[in-house]
Image 1 (tube, rainbow, N blue to C red):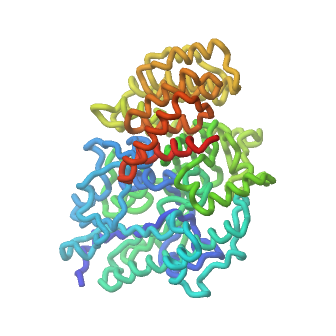
Image 2: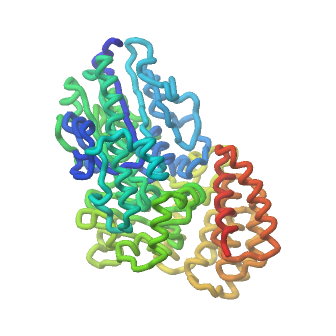
Length: 607
């Protein structure tokens, strides 16, 4: 048994799970069977307004471990592995400097790699491996509730998970409460029942870790955090900026010696808005350290606790082969979403999720039609530029109030807050991924976006707003020397015309930019030309970019997937490239090749 640490250096234990909203009995969920976590809530504090910074794992974990928004570092795109500057240190770096032993068991997944973060990061990592008497910061991640775990046949699910539960613990599909935006069928009910079964098993796994803490005599010296990495893994949860994708369960239990000083009275709840970007500054505050200047979050506990923020912010960017660019602002009552790619549907084609039983069932029912208004919201072919929801009156966020004059003041205030946040945090997501990587060559994305001569973010936002919100195209900027402004000005042609017939002037303008120095612009131009029925010269440009690497190749592959043009002269070449990429992707660590393989495979299935 290890001895106790000094009084002013509490141990910190993070127990995390995956893909989970507050599906716990302590949060009032009558479907949940979670006795262990309910007990933890009664012994600690339940946070009711806690949110991830992204509705998917890697960018959320990036902010969690650094206290910096993924979009400030360029780590927002799934499996992108970007470089970050030396000045950006992670929470474990600071804790190790303060004398802590830091272990991670075992998921990292930050979209950047740094072998110096942890003392130990593996499936065997544990506080028990630390030098005796040394305080620890230990993270344990439980993957049981990940979306992938509900996949498979009934027999496969039972063999892996179902047999672990008693009859009383298994969830009856007929008793499940299905969200109104979801299709209610026997198959979807079964999938939701499986999900809750997994929550029950995860609840036991949490207790196993807490039992080890008890066995080692460390309960009275360890502060415990429990939370999930983002919202539910079900469709319209994961990858979406609604509460279903971002709102998380968050419990904090402190030993009696720390309860009063931290304000963590057992059995209470805290309604303060809390974001992942706040977690690192908070842990440092608990041990008496002030967060470094580059951390963008605010401590909500400890010596350096700050006043509660009015809003928390979140981002949604590329996941797998699906490009995305949406931002959200969440207050105590209202949720605002700004969609910068409104022409894309909320539920985009995605090779990985589309193979799941739940998505196959949803698309089957979708094809039959007869959708309710709530279901139409989920499956609309495009999205509004702005969304506004009263989360108290509309907990599933279905009734968009953005066009309601009664809410103009709220809409304007939250719109301004989103724009200010983008400027203050240097939102790199407003740069196409291939261009972002190119502009940062010789430096890092984090440093590049802070240079206004490269990223004039206020001008970029003004330009996008001019045509997406106001319907005015600032065509002069199509000739801008700045490639970011040039890209968005050209993208505005598609937004303003909104027709399959492109005016001759714009058609010639687009043709002129098929050989722009920046591939992102070439791909955007070719995409628009194909969309407007002028694909003869455009499609070969997209195919040519498939012979490159990284985000440039993937962006072209996705554009080809969305294209309906299938000229005989490019089909054989695309087929050969698809075979080559899929062969490379067998490695499963070559993510850009894997996602491009998926996109081209789907394109080749088209009639």
